[in-house]
Image (tube, rainbow, N blue to C red; front, top):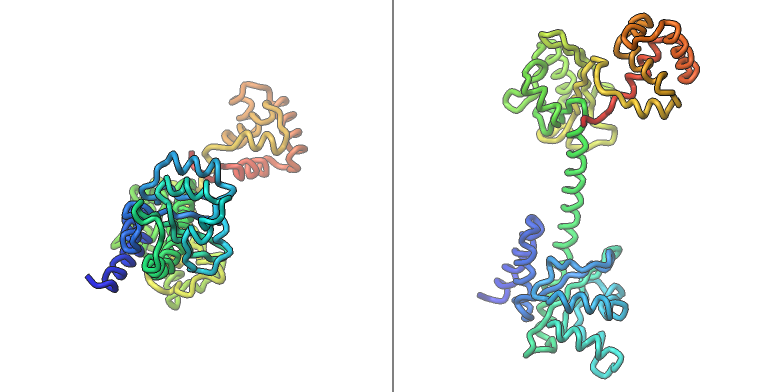
Length: 371
């Protein structure tokens, strides 16, 4: 295999590792083999975050890594590589020459751990990284050929790492958003311009499984009510994009058991993706909410917000769940006059004047997320 073919194979392994982080160990091993160092040792330091990726440190002995960090961390010559040019390659001996007696102990400890010499580089702003390559005991000094090969690989290592970080951030963001959306008490569907479902949360999947309000047909979101389905399609398909009001549309949904729900169709926000009319790109969010007021109430939050006594809170929740003062009186087993006294105090504390306002206030404290 020619040198160009070897380099091409190494670079292929590097960029494969970007897409599959589990391959980083193998990719770094191939780099070490290509450069000419020990085929089981290559270290990656992130100087911006001040940590060493032990999972990508091949062949090192943990005791020496810990000892060096504790005893010589403040004197590590590689802490100064952030001042180098991007992709500049150097050896450890250029930072700690033999004649510098003050560096001898640091150098000897690195040599004992297998790092008698090293090649670093790949500095970028604001992110700085260095790669350190160990050599075998029989070849403790990096020669010109190793430096040349490291210079060929270093730019690609840096580029692969930066691309991997971008991918990592995007995957982390997607996982975070997905986790949050899964806990919403409303059904959520992200759809493209053709109505294809790109993502749905747990409540959304439950709605689809019930097959009473919405269905999935050929990958598309379809309302069981023909009129509602037509309104959704007209709103989304208009001129091939979402050009209706920024607030979207609101449609009523009712099951055969007369359970009422509200469906919201929300377009992608202003300044969104220019590819919004492209299949496979989110064009709208469809949200389905239960129109009933029944459900869990954050009683503790209401009590703290309005400084209610336990008795006042019980009356307030009973008004929400039961209804009139006489019904609350019978439900709680207290006199009507006592209920009226508590209600008057509730009006004063919540700045309301009608029972309907109290019910609306309580409804606003329904949890956003399911437990």
